[in-house]
Length: 291
Length: 220
Image 1 (cartoon, rainbow over the protein chains, first blue to last red):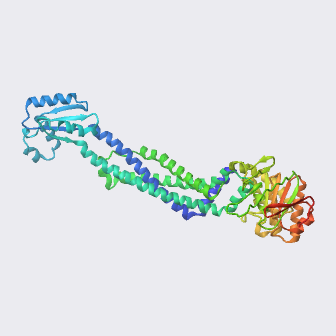
Image 2 (cartoon, rainbow over the protein chains, first blue to last red):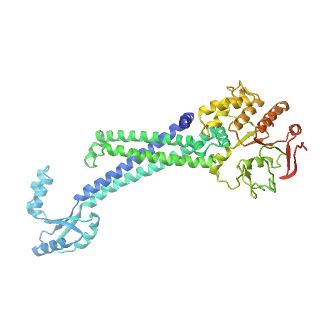
Image 3 (tube, one colour):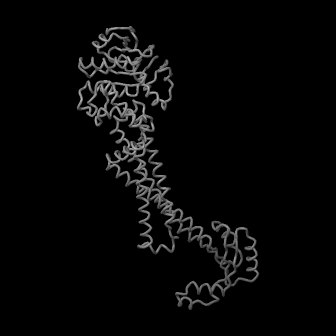
């Protein structure tokens, strides 16, 4: 009977103040959707970093007039460098083959370049791609070195943009969450006011505190959970749009988001949504009901 | 005990000491602002004294933690001048509400509530709403609600304050009947008529001090 009483009270409470309930659910939805989006982006950026940095190379291009001693000396140095995981020597011929492969769609360009115009190089895989700077400082003045190029510099720019988007959505999510929580606090106050007589009687006859508070707290939690369900819906719709619409071209760049990743996001946003609303409601009641 | 409210120039209750025995019927009388209601609030663990102790049912409630308050209140019934009924519930539902919110089942309520409504003389009016009842009848519902849980103590804060003299006497008969079941009744009032008719113990308070404590007393 107690459970039934509490659930009836929750439904009546949500319905009595239905415009407020809707406002609460909408802000909750937007906030949790952005939180979920930000979480997925965080995962993706992590995945992509693993994937791309794994293959990232630092290239040391050599002078065209490099001497054989300088080359062997450099090769030996690189072999013994603790920062370098592996180094590969690419001679002119191989560089030309790579060049042909890379620009096979532009035969004019390939034809314009002669095989011996391309510089020899060492392709390095670093133990930690972020230590590029050390490598650069160490080898930039070594004899025979023309130029040092770090591919990860390019990736960093991409990741900076993605991390920026992620931080921005997280920020908006927090702002929306603040608005949602203020609405929760307000809704709870209105609900407590409209039930002040019942609450007074309950306190008087000795109803336990949880029994007095539970309907109010659950009211907020139900709204939070509805927000989480709708936010999940938005994420699903978002994936459809990303997969089919104008965003489809990004698919190649960003590793695809799987359904399981989206649905695993649900317990997280639902948990955060209900926990945060429950705490807000409870704190509001502490101040407002003094039970 | 002594109770001083913040910002008050003098204590609401100043060195007051009263012992009320089990099964007694006690009036607290005195002018407005004399501190009578503060006593009720202390017995309910709503306010705590600044000095001294409040012992109810053998338990020291002065230092009782607030989370124990609900269980404590189940042993005390309470009636007020303004009835404090829920307007959107019938007489039956008002009384049943008090049982259900402390975890009693509907089956218990169906058994106990008609019984207690019969006791207070409201048999046949169970399904009326408060606005369909007279003031005296509403106060009977309130008494039924306070008594349905068979408390050891019944506190009544000016229970006849809103009622005409004849109705007041009926309510007093009811409280007297409840007192005869062994329930201690503590009543705050300034209705001299009633006090004079009942001839029960009277404790008079003035400016926070006890000026009279008399068995079988009269008003002033």
